[in-house]
Length: 252
Image 1 (cartoon, rainbow, N blue to C red):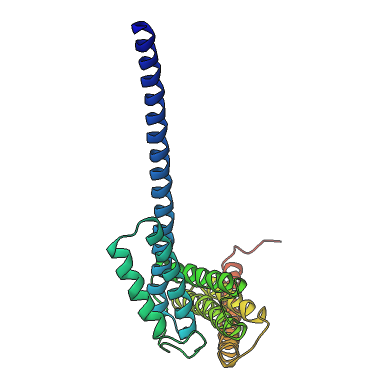
Image 2 (image 1 turned 180 degrees about the vertical axis):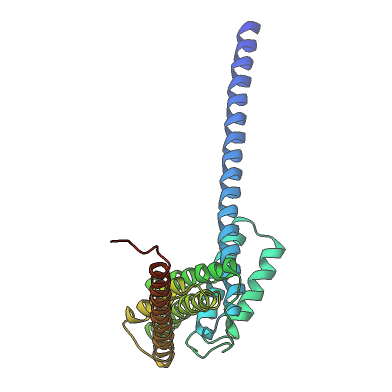
């Protein structure tokens, strides 16, 4: 009888250990999954807040800022659901206040100031930020959270900013090459800038004025290349004449 009880207790302990182990493993898996979710949400929030920061350098509409604030607010709510901390709650309230202060249909510009940096890395960062802003805008529009008129205005505005950065960067490089007397390289940069404008499906004051100034620059470069070629030919002819003059005369 005693042996039976001992064996039963041993079996019970084994079962209990298995159950406790399974519960612990389940809790560990849940905690691991919670941390993974939190890491994904934190990464998403960092990207959105980076876009909010970068948007201060662009002449974009208040409606675009409203889209970003809404995305950040949504991600913070997801983070709070996974980890209900006071910090997340405070940040949720902060974004809630921001959203209440901005009309999501107000496409008026936050600021008209816009300056293209000199540093190539900063230029690349700007272009990448614009691409991400467009992707965010399209994603929110596809979800039915952005008005179609707002989407049209802001999407076109972002496209024009991308175009302007590209054209101005090419013109700047072309001007630098010209000042360094690298006429061939300068012509290539200007020609690329002109093609970029001609490939667009729209035309406005900016593209029209830039197209005219680029064509004038190309005309000037073409004239200087022609003049340089003429000077080279004249120089070569003069050298050939001198060489012929000082050649020993043949005796017949």
